[in-house]
Image 1 (cartoon, rainbow, N blue to C red):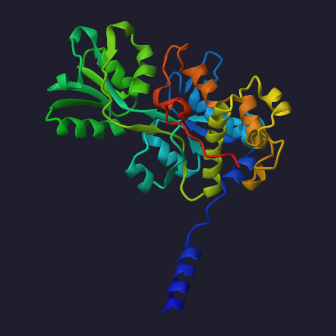
Image 2: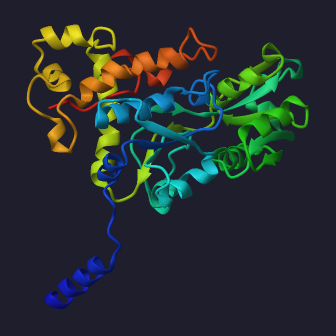
Image 3: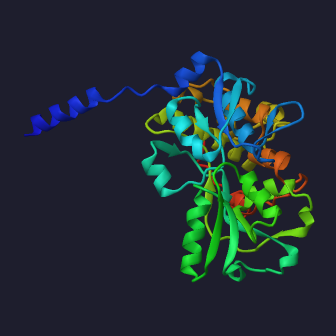
Length: 337
């Protein structure tokens, strides 16, 4: 019986299609293919030079820096969340770094793996100041603009049902901008999506100061990069690229001081991180200085935050839950050893 089971398992394994090794594919191609969000200021948008700029774009640049020692060896494909998983599965991109909430159903049924939470978010609501609405509980019977098929759609239904509230959904199939425009035109009483998206797309409102984001956060919306299921080495690379950026911030290493730290540090963990002690890269097929290249060319997590979405940007987002664990936040990287 045991032999029959072993033969059956071997037959199934032989029949299964071989999984392509993403790292080898990327190296052979000569650049990374990164899926990112469409027109989401601070996270992924196109600047006046035609360049993709934002936290999502910089995360992918960090992967390119780790693989090639050159953060510019990358091409971006802009993907709305509804298409992202299909495009990723097709092999048209190597990773999707856009705004797609990590949920049970997505994680276990779409043939993808969420790598890590690199932005802790939650669903919120925007209303006009003149409405006088101060709380989500005051939206009973309201019309609410949202994006059809998004995680926000189901979360809204769950929350209003649990609180015995009624609402009318005004749903748009294509883009968050469509929901925002409809809200601005007065076609609904409120607009709901992740608070980061409200902050980013809210920049496009003609009179932003006439609108307010309500204080309640009705969901957990962990956001992070997504890779195809089954390629463990590629998932490890995507995970540890993020951790390098967090550890660098913990250790006070920035893109500006990394060379000085590399030349003088006596910290064994930092020496491993910067490639002067041991060769951690060979454990998953990357150069010895892969982590140094990330920090030098892209920066640590805090630098990327401050550059695109921090207090001195148009979004002006405080770190909150996205702060290091040493400062009361949720960012915590395993030891680099």
